[in-house]
Image 1 (cartoon, rainbow, N blue to C red):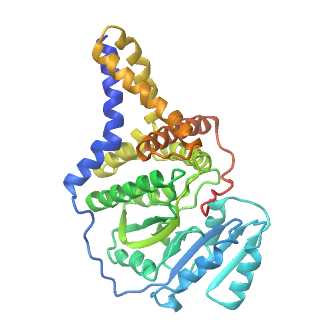
Image 2 (tube, one colour):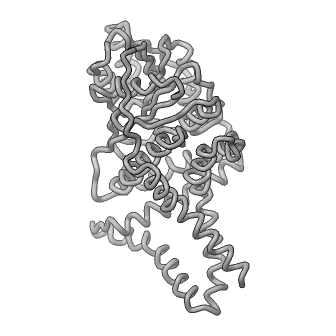
Image 3 (cartoon, rainbow, N blue to C red):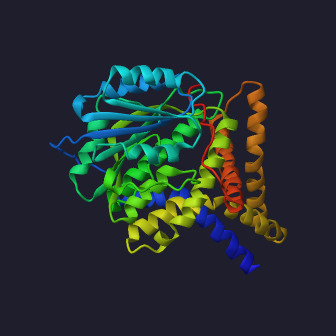
Length: 387
C-alpha cells in the first residue's frame, strides 16, 4: 500500500506543481512581473507576416488596425499569403495590395497549412524584425512600437504580446478561457523576467528577429512554440511585453475549443520530442520552466488517470482515501451537472471551471494518442473566433 500511496501523491504533487506551485514560485521571485522600461530610438523595418484562410470577415479590419499604428508607416510592410481561401479573402486582399505598395499579397492555389505558408512568406520579408500574427488579432496604435522596443537588448530574440480577450459570454466557456489565457500571460511574463525563458508565445501575435527564424517542419501543428524554442535553443531570450497589447475574441463554444485544443495538444507532443534536449538544458531556468509549465501539464491526464487508479484500492482500507475518492468522483460529475444546468440556461462559473479543466485534459490525452499515431499534414480548419 505504501507504493500506491507514493504513486498517488507523486501524481497529486505533479499536477499541483504545474497549475499552482510553479506560478506561486514565479510570483515570489518576480512579484511585479517584468517591469523593464524598454527604450529603443532605432525604428527598424518591420515585416508583418500572416497566413490567411477564409478571413473575409476580419482581414480588412486587421490591415486597418496595422496602419493606424504610431510606428513610422514607411517602415511597415505587410506580407500575406492566402492558403487557398474559398471566400472573398483573395478579392479583398488583392484590392488592398493594389492600393498600397506596402502590402504584398500572394494567393496560393493549394492548401498548405499556416506554417508552410509562413515559411515561404518569410523569404519575402525585408525587415530585420518579423511580426507573426493571425488575421483576427487586432492591433492598437502602440502594438508595433511596444513589440519592437525590447529588441534594443541584443540578447532578446522573441517578444510576445499581451493578449486581451473580448466578447465574453455567460453561456459558454469564454470566461473560463479568458481566465486561463490571462493567467498564462502572467506566467509567461514572469518566466521572461526571471530567465528569458518564456515557454512559447501566443500564436496570435509575436515578434522575432528574422535571423533567428527557422523553417517549421511541414507536419508540425504548433508552429509558434517551435519558432520560439528554436530561438531559445540558439541562446537568445524570449520575453513577454505587457505593454504590447492585442485584441482577440475568445472562444465560447466548448466543442469548437475542444477540437482546437486536441490539435494544439498533438503539436505540443510533437514539440516535446523535438526539444527534449532542453529538459536537461544548461540553462536551469529553461529546463525548470519547460518541465514545470509545459511538460507536467501536457502529461497531466496521465497523472489524473493514475491517481484515480491507485485511489480506488487505497480507499478500501482508509477513511481518508475514501473521502478523497468521493471528492474526486464528485469533481468528475460537475461537467455533467454543468451540461444539465446549461439546458435550463443556468450558468455557474465555478462549476464551468471544472468543465473547462477536464475538457482541456481530455483534449491533451486525445492529442497524445494522435501524436503517437503520427501527423502527416499541418493543414487544419481554423477555429471560428468571431461568434
